[in-house]
Image (cartoon, rainbow, N blue to C red; front, side):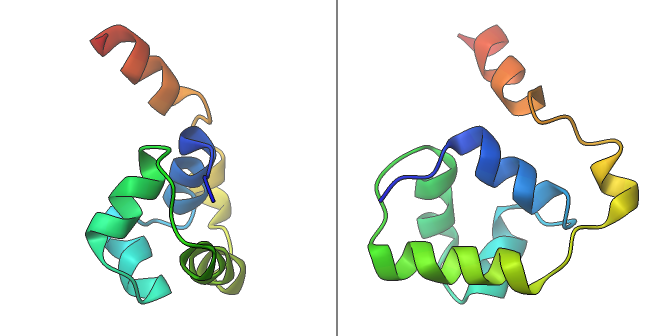
Length: 80
């Protein structure tokens, strides 16, 4: 199963998490989260753990207003 990289990065960011934070919350390795952030395939059970962690922890409204959904995508385009 694959996540859209910009969406999973956005969802983690509005909860105040980086890759390590999402990994801790989901009980998976940082390498696994890195794969998901990179748009690579993760196992269905892992995808479920990530989704449940995101669902369990609410969005921080103050972050939601400052985190841009497209910022990660724009940064990648510039780097290319």
